[in-house]
Image (tube, rainbow, N blue to C red; front, top):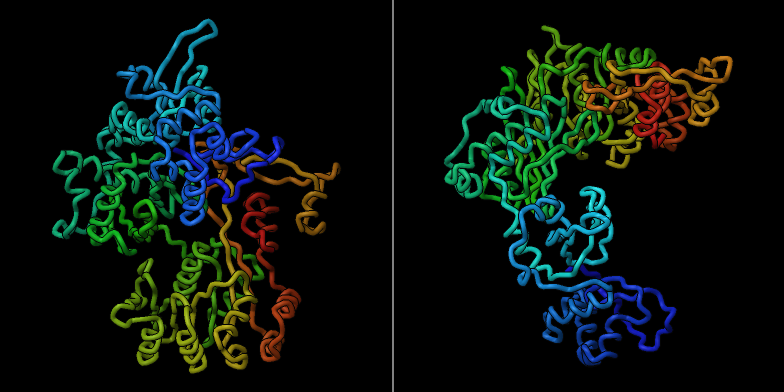
Length: 616
C-alpha cells in the first residue's frame, strides 16, 4: 500500500478543527481525529496495540499501516475495508472478479498501470457515456485518475484493492513483450529502421568467454539474444544519428530511462522495457570487454564501432545504483574534431592573446571549465597549431580521446603506477619542447608542471575552476607559492559552450532595447531602431534540429593574460576581485561579455546566454 509514516505523537483530545490526519495506512485524510485514534474509538484496535505500533514506528520509521498488519494486530483485509469506508470508495477483492476482459486491460497502458500500481477491472456503458473502473492501492492519487480521463476520454472511478492482488493481476493480464516486440516498438517510436538496428559493427571481437553472463546468455538460449543485441546497436546508432555526445541508460524502480546529450542538453528518447535492463547492460559490458558478472563496483571500458563505414570510439562507464546499473557511453568521433582555432568562437582580442601565449618558448597555459565545456578540443587545437617536424610534443591523458599524428600520447594507468605525475616526470627525461597534461589533480602534478615550465618547456593543462582568475586562487589552495605562479603562468582560459541557432529554421525577431540593458548589455553595443527595438535571432524548430531550434555549439572564451601587473597582484596575494579588475582593465572579456557578443551577432539566443553564464 502506498503510505506515509504517521507522526510519532498522538493527541486523543484533538479538537475537530485539527489539520488533516494521517491514516493507519499513511494516507492524508480530511477527518477530525487521527486514524489510529479513530480505529481505537470504534473498536478496530485496542489502545495497547496502537501504542506498540507507534513505538515500533518511532524506532524503525516504518509505515504505520504496514506495521499494524505485520505485527498481527490487524488483518490487511480489515484495514483496507476500514480505509475504503473513510475515503468513501468501495473495497473489493480482485480474485473474486474472475477474468478481466482484454478490451478493459487495453484501456490502460502497462507502463502507467505498473508505475501507479493500478489495474483496470471494468468498463460499463451508461447514459452519460462509458465509465472505466480501476483498482488502486492509493485512493488519493487523483492525478492518475485525471490523466486516465484525458487519455481514454472515459469517466474513471477508482476502488481500493490490496497492492499484492494488483501486482498479481498486472502479471496475469499484461503479456510481457518479447525482445523482438520491444525492439519493434522502439523502432516505431523513433522512426528508425531495422537496417539501422543492424548497422553497428563492433570492431573488436566480443570476449564471450567471460564468466557470469546469465542475463544475455539466457536470452540467447530463448531466442531473444539477437533482438537485445540489435536494441543496443539501435541506441548507439540513434545517438550518433542525433549528433549526441553521450548516451545515458538509467534504471528506475519500474522502468528504464534513456537520454541522449545533444548540444550539451539531455533529451529523453524511447527506452526498452524494464525487464531487458540487465541484458542490455550485459551486452554493453561484453562489447567493452568488461566483467559482466561484476555488478557491485563501477567499471570503465571502451568500445570501437563502425557505423556506415565510419569509426567511432565509445567511452563506457558502468555505475551500480539503487535499482541496477547505470550505463553512460561518451561518443568520440575523431573525424569531427575541430582543430581550426578560427572556427572555435574566439573573440578577436582573446584570440590575439591566445596565439601569443601558445607560441611562447616556455611557461604554463591553463584551460579551465566544467566537464563537457570543450577543454580537450581547445587543447588539441593549440597542439595542432604547434605540431611541426621541428617540435617534440608529448601528452599524458586520461583517457586519450583523439589520436593526433606526430604527437606522442600516453594513456594514464594508475593501476600500474602510471599517473599524471609519473608520466610528466618521465617526459622531462625525453627532451620535449611542448608538454600537455590532461588534468592537474594534485600538488605533485602541478609542482612538476611548474618545474618543467621554469626549465624551458611549454606546458598545457586543465584545471576545474569557474572562471579564469579563479585558477590562481585554486593553485594557491593547492599549496603553490605565489612566486612560482607569477614566474610560470602565461595565460588562463575559462570556457563554456553555448548552443548555436539552427540555420534551417532561423528567424529574426525584435525585443525592447531596455530589456536587454537590464540583462547587462551595454547601450553602446545595441543597434536600436526608431521604435526602441533591437533585432535578435532564434530557431523556430524543425526536423533538422529535432524541434529544438538549436544545432551545434559555439565557444565562449575568457582569456586572462598574466601580465606584469597581474604577476604583482599574485605576489602580493591580492584577492581575486583585484585580479578580475586588473584583467578587465587590460581588455579581458568575461564569459557573459562573450555571450552578449554571440547574442547580438545572431549566433545564439537570450535563453542560452542566461543558461550558460548565469553565474556572471
